[in-house]
Length: 334
Ligand code: COA
Image 1: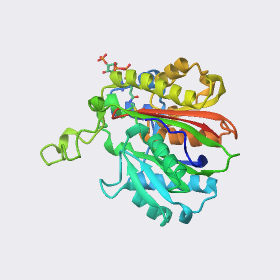
Image 2 (image 1 turned 135 degrees about the vertical axis):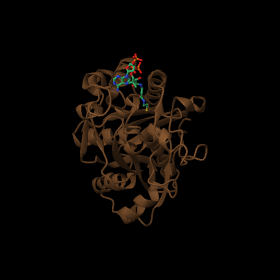
Image 3 (image 1 turned 30 degrees about the vertical axis):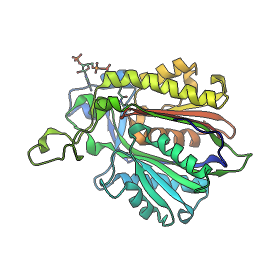
Image 4 (image 1 turned 90 degrees about the vertical axis):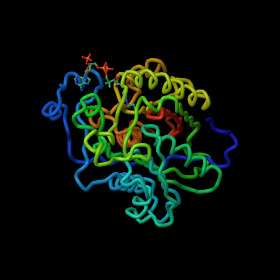
C-alpha cells in the first residue's frame, strides 16, 4: 500500500521517547536454565542481553513511560494529545485496548486511543495511519507507541525462541509541520497472510483458548520457524526500504541513518549490504535489548536521536518486518 501525494498537511516527528525495564537478563543468565551459550546466541543473532519487565509492570506502564518522554521532548502536554495508537502483540488485556490504559496513565483524556496488532511492524503501521489522519486534517497530533512485554509470552524452556526476545517500549509524537520543518516523506506497508504459520502465538485467542487440559503445553507462547522467517525478512525489508527511498527522490548516499527492526544482526547486515548503505550508517542496539517486536524500531529511533546520530535536515529510513507476515518502511526528513 503506497502513499498518495495529495496530502494537505506535512507531518513531522516532533519528539521521541523510550523506556526499558531495569532487570537485565544476560546470555550467561540464560545458560543457567536452558541448553545454550553466549557464543551461540551472539554469533547467530548479535544479542548479548535483554530486559525483562518486573512483576506487576505491564505493557501499558512501559508504553506510558516512553510516551511521557516523547511528549516532553515535543513540548506537548498530555491534555493536548488528540490520538494515541499503541502497537503491541502483548496487550495488558485482550480488551480493552492497551492504549486505553495508556490514555488514563498519561492523563490524556482528550485523546482517542486504540491498539493495532502488526507484530514487529506495528510501530511503522501506526506511523502511517497517524500520518495519514493528521495530513488529512482529522487530528493535528498523535502519540504513537510500540510496547511489548514479550517475557509473558515466551516458553522459557524453548531455546529456539527464549534467547531472542525482550521487553520495552518506544514512542514518537507526530504533528502537523510547517513547510520549513522536517516531514515524513514516504511510508510503505505490506502483508502476506499466507505465511501466518511461520511466526505466531497459537493459543490464548478464540481459535485455541487456554483450558485446564492444554494449560501445560505453552500454547500462549511465541512459536517460530526461524530460517524461513530470516529469508523473508531480508527480502521484504530490502524491497520496502528501496520503495520509500525511491518515492522520496533519494539515493542511498543521501541516507544519514537507517534504523531497522532489531531482530538479528545478520539480517541487518544483509539489508545494509543489499541497500548499499555502509554499516556505520545503520543503527544497531539489539545487543542490549534483543528483539522487542513493535517496540524495537521505536526504541532504536529514540536512542539514535538522543545520541545525536540524527540531526535536523537528515534523511533517515526506518524499516521493519514481523509476524503476519508484515513489513513496513518510512523515509523521514528530520
Ligand atoms: N542455543 C544453542 N543451540 C541452538 C539454540 C540456542 N539458543 N537454538 C537453536 N539451536 C540449535 C538448533 O537446535 C540447531 O541444532 P541442530 O543443527 O542440531 O538441529 C542449530 O542450533 C541450528 O539451528 P538453526 O535454527 O538452523 O539456526 P539458525 O542459524 O537459522 O539461527 C535463528 C536461528 C532463530 C537465530 C535465525 O534463524 C533467525 O534469526 N531467524 C530470524 C528470526 C527473526 O528474526 N524473527 C523475528 C522476526 S520479527
